[in-house]
Length: 134
Image (cartoon, rainbow, N blue to C red):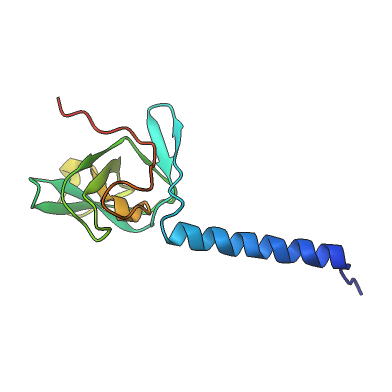
């Protein structure tokens, strides 16, 4: 029967602690590290999040669902405050289109709270560029 030695036990304990700390930090929004590939940014996010089409700052309509994690995003902007207590939203194309909204092809906005950012600003500092408003 195999028995780990003291060094192996200490290493395993440290690894479990690192995994637990990483999971806790991500859940609190301390990690919102995104990375860029071409014109798209990939970010860890909450899967099964609605993607909203914006009619104006007060009226948002769910048009799709973002199932993947991580997901890709093109830029961020200010729209309106959401449950994350900021007004930062990320532009993406969802993985599924909701019935009746096929014309949008699941394109829309995801609240920063689904990316793990909270607070008055986009404190997760995702690195995504701000959307151009030309």
